[in-house]
Length: 122
Length: 204
Image (cartoon, rainbow over all chains, first blue to last red; front, side, top):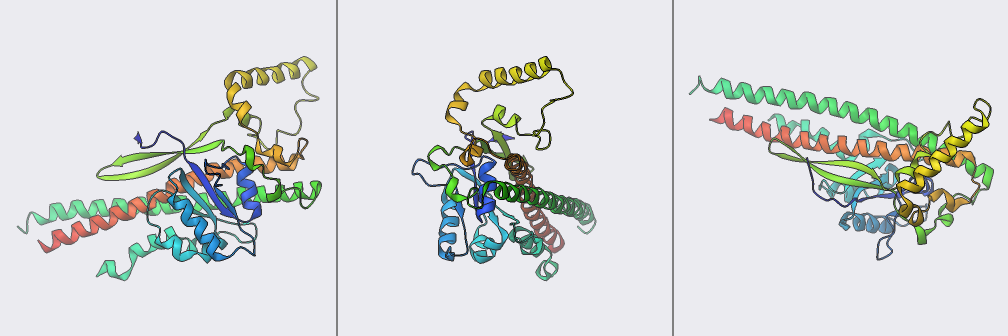
């Protein structure tokens, strides 16, 4: 096992107010030199475009290792999450206060299911 | 030719089975860890709601974030794990302010600090030890780092401290989930390559 990057990377969060507050209380929040935060608080008025932009922004940043996203919000930008196939940053779907986690919606587990598609057995 | 085939075919089949068993074990663990994460977060949300009930509706939220002094105390180290020909990414959590976290590890024991069972001297020594440790360990970090709980006031309710402890646990759980997901992707890739290898052997 070798360290590919000695510098610690951040965990980013895209979530509702409670999820963001909770994880920031846990000590993951930080603003970079350009004063860009590693979190996005989404409310019912946040347009999908803003969520997608923030998500793509987090994927581009090299100081982020994990992106946490509420599954309900992930559903809105599913196409963007499905198109991300790099190991870093890892996109992890988490439950929110209102909705429990549903494994059948999770991008990674859905991809893993695809492993046993009919095409493989041809 | 046909006599040689079974040995390689057997080897590939055996490896395929191994990978598949490992894959299902990994997925099982992943489901378990996701359920744990959900329970921890649920407790965290509950405690946050209680804190909000005590402090007022608007007192725990976005408007309280102190973006000027925001510094992450938990960072992730990404390591490469070499396994056969595959390179796997592993995540590891590091605390940049380890001594500050010590006081918040146990959400339950935080409430009463040996007020009745221990003598006065005993309590004092425990307290002074902690203070010494914290000053020795990271005198620099304490200057730069401000505990996020202070965004919400100096005398915050116990429920908010408990919520913080739960979300710290949730962060650890998230790292485990990330590692398991990374392993699932890795095993899937391994399975695909072995399938191709098997096809190659059968066509030969």
